[in-house]
Image (cartoon, rainbow, N blue to C red; front, top):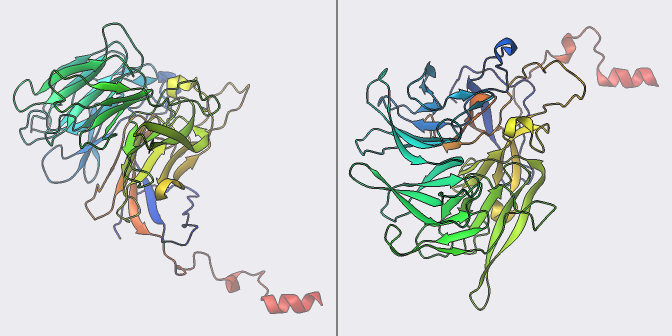
Length: 449
């Protein structure tokens, strides 16, 4: 087992699988970086700190490094290199970086960064990896928007490499559903606008109708990809469902970014997994096909007592070859104005199990609400949340997947240390016979008679 220099979460509980099917993977959290707690300078344990992370080999040495806003962290010791790119500025309690990911935009063999912001940036940029440590990454704007929620990547034109899907949080005149085709020559990305429907918080990429082409899902329906997605043929919008509140089926809510397309119950039809970004609730929308071929979706709630599932990702955490769902609570979205803001902060992973969604705890911290208390709460240890972008990958290349997450509370890695032992471990306390007050059980029983 690898040895890491870690500050171990005090009182961490290693939960064993309850159904007896297998062992429970053990994840140990490691803090890479976090906000300075300096109230005099308006910096606290709850930010400002970038809420997005990317995993890539920045310096070409074969190790996977991390980027988080304006900083990158050099593996294996996670040395911080500050201000390697522009964008991701601090703005009050927030950081202007609501999504980022690694992508070789100019096809030079070096991974670049694509990032977006909703404050000063008002759009998206790609940042060119110069191939030299210490040299600033050049910024190129690829999209402009008044209300930018983020960008995600996936193959939208069917050519085998990733394109970029844009998300705006609400309809605005002059804006529409937009994706960027990744081409093999400068300017490398070409913008396509496909319609105004579904222009709400959250979207995703996946094949809904089973024709082998990736479609676009939104909170109020989905766009069907045409045979030539980048051509003049229009994308058809299907208003087949609405992502709604737990207690109000007719009220649309802000969906997670991304929404995930996955065949949850393995019936051959892809379903949709979606979180409530600023409300309570986590759900999957089961796709059904009637005898007449008509498509419909049935909402199944996974969670109704937890909220602020702003982002999520699929990845195999327990080594069974099947994707698991990783998600959690964003810390203080909308500056603490959202419902559920003062509920416990958490990171969960779910063994999907055909729709059972067995919950496992990676981290769980209670952030108490003390009405009437004017002084700020002290900085807690390991306040780990899921911000606006997380990654599941084999970070140390040992054959199992880690979880990398960033939020206002800091940047963390959950190291996958294999499975919890089922045999008795070493004695952690001094032998009972060494205690001066110890009385053997048999003698204690005789004294009582």
